[in-house]
Image 1 (tube, rainbow, N blue to C red):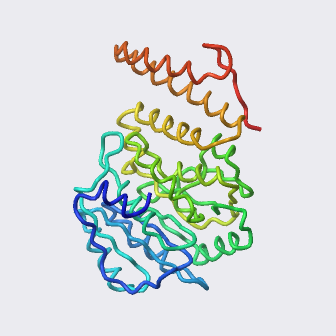
Image 2: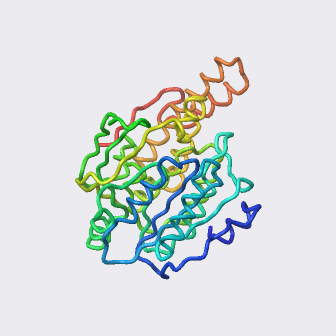
Length: 327
């Protein structure tokens, strides 16, 4: 899928790209998605603009028609830094609903498909970078290790009020698909990855997929290994405004469907038989959870449908779950 095909399918009102002086063919494209982030977006953009690099990078700033002043701040920054920022002014008419609620998925995919760089970095509008050499360190590593598909790093987590949240343990070293399948520890704002998985972006359009960033991480790790640097170079802001958090709070069933989407998508593209078995048993458990959720709501036909689906994914004898471990 390319940007032309995507817009033909989903763009109901033309996105406005503000005039800019950004250089062609930058080495890195930094994708920023923002909506109702007036309190945070300046800190996000300042953290990117302070980067000291020996290469060109562009900032793709997708503003999703905020009404809290975010759009005005983005325009101000784009005017002040025309050689760095490509500002895309979006419209709610193009919004793609996920889990039945409006999201920034259209903005996210537009940014990804518009990226000109060899590498893509991500930073949501409510997160920020803290090390001025973050991009340089990660690009240096990727350039020296062409077999590595993504480079991440350690990070801090804070609450909406600014208090330090419980630190998420991230092991600094090689990252494999099996590691990320067992436990999701890589955060969006830490990522720099090779711009070579556009064929996978169709999977982001699944109407039940809340965690688009995690799916991208897994698709990258299908292609090769990642690496986590030991430096702490970004901050993840935890608040209820995030799609995964808000939808999970509203309906646990949405989170179950989200995880089903993730594991099914990876199952379609993975060739390793052991990982296939692991994914199938994960899906069996998720469909069973979905079935029990439907049973509590007295939806017996849907309960049976999910129960049969659960059984179809079990590795081993019917209705006997054989636990698969990824060593």
